[in-house]
Image (cartoon, rainbow, N blue to C red; front, side, top):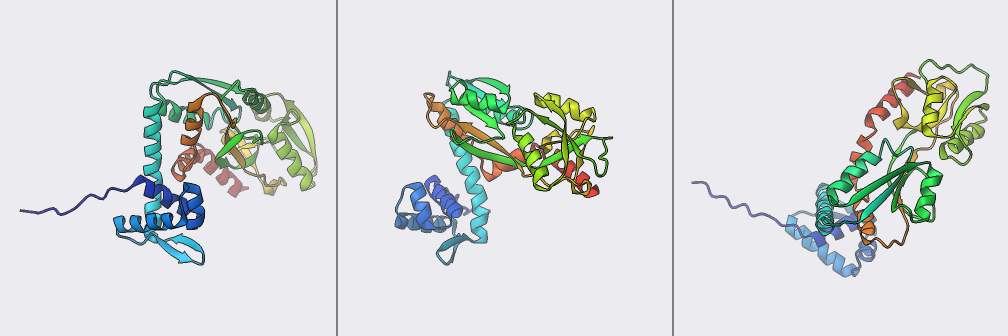
Length: 312
């Protein structure tokens, strides 16, 4: 007869929260401020956690606390445990929520990030009525400022709002598959109206590197940009998610400069009358796990872009 002496270990959520804070902030003092405890209390909590798991989790490096290999191993699980705990609590708390959430999404987020976010929101808040409005960045940010929408998905931040960085994506030069740049001639640009983010990115990069350019087509929407580029009217600067079989990426070999990454942001007003919006905003905050899943949204397009760049 076989005797099983294995005893399950139950991890304390409070200890895990403090552990993650120490891992993120590198010192017990900073973590203490983040979790609203004294430094000695944090030290005692971490000693208790090490006793529970039977492993050393921290190694001292000057004033900083660095994770040991076992600490790194536990950190990934700790983040997942806390995320699932917070999602479960939020889902139960607002499972019968009958209010309405209005999401604003800019054109550059509607096909990439928006479907993923809607999937998470409806899973957490199954009874919540969700309305989505897709428009230009300027319009979406204006609607958020006027409290006509509750949260906004955008690639352009604004100091008026509380915002979270969900992920980044390469910004690349695109043109039609059969489009060719003539050496010595100005780059024909397909861009949107003044004030649009990617217009500014493209022009600033070309001017900074002293690359001559000319306006070939000024569009009033992302859809119009796509049509103009596919028609071979010129090149444009957009996030990697724009890549389609009928387009190709232009690189430095063709005289075009590198561009800064696109940032995908979730924004909300600091104050709102809808209490559940703050909870939702916190739950949707990215963790390494969700960042990984968000990055997978565009992994095929990004890999394809890298292959094209390596050929160029």
